Image (cartoon, rainbow, N blue to C red; front, side):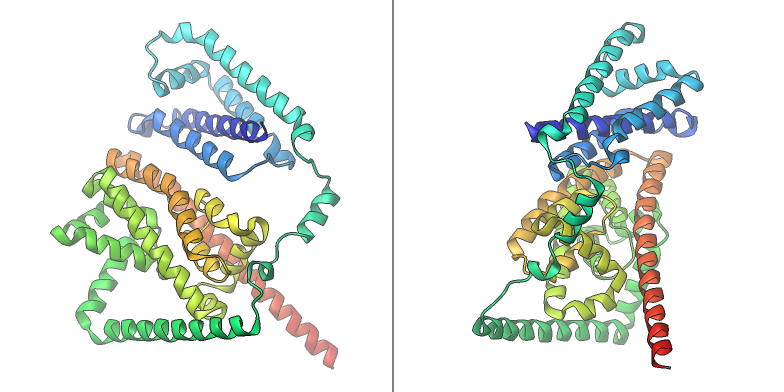
Length: 404
């Protein structure tokens, strides 16, 4: 029963967000004719479904608990003050392929909305009956008891530890040799350096049309080049992966494009996982940043071994950093692999469908939204790095003052 309650609430929330963005789109007639309303609705229904699967309870925080009702209120006020109340009916008619005249849908629409809200009001009102509702003090106490990173690492006997260190030493040597060979090839072979530099410069323009043209220039090798680029961006390149996913769908069709994007992203995740396992935390923090890995640590401490699946479902969490973080724990490879494969599938399908069916301004609008997601990740990481650096400087100053 609890799982159904949570699933219903998050599905309703996703639907409400979808209506909000669909309504917002009506103010921009340039894009309204290009973006299919049902796509917006279904994307956010899917997002609500993913949240319902990822979480087994409804947050007790005021904003999150009442987010559904807040979103509906804003959407209703937006429609009311703009004189677009009937637009909600047209959105419903178009999204669910209804043939009934719009005027005859008003009463059923109102009834369905009222029923959904009554159910959700009941869910929120009886929250304490089905799940523990914590006070602020209890939440602080729970946070102190959250899983620590040290608990995600196995406690081994001296013999097992020695065997593990020997294996890790071989992995480290292998990784360093491969990295060294890659760097030598990159700097010593001009054609390799020029091609890679040009590839990253092309993708960094954040224009799918340019990326599509670039990949198509390789003819039959386009899929191989795309596969390699996806792995490279996973390791270190600050390039949003959805650019390559959208391009794959446009070139190979959304189904085969999704297969290519999913498999190449899986390969990139595996490389990140084993790099972290072979090199350890220090080198990985230098490759990414200390702040970035600290941000990922928060998810591992909160969700433990469920972190991979949950983070793959959330679009604002860095795919690559989670892979690195998993490699630094004692998580079994196949647990990581399966959770990554299932977790990233919904987003891959959505991006591929968009890349294979939308064109022009509609695709640019979607690309803009996804870029905002990517930038929000970068900004949060930069903020974390700055805060860490600032704290270190303050601690150094404190030590210097105390020694005088």
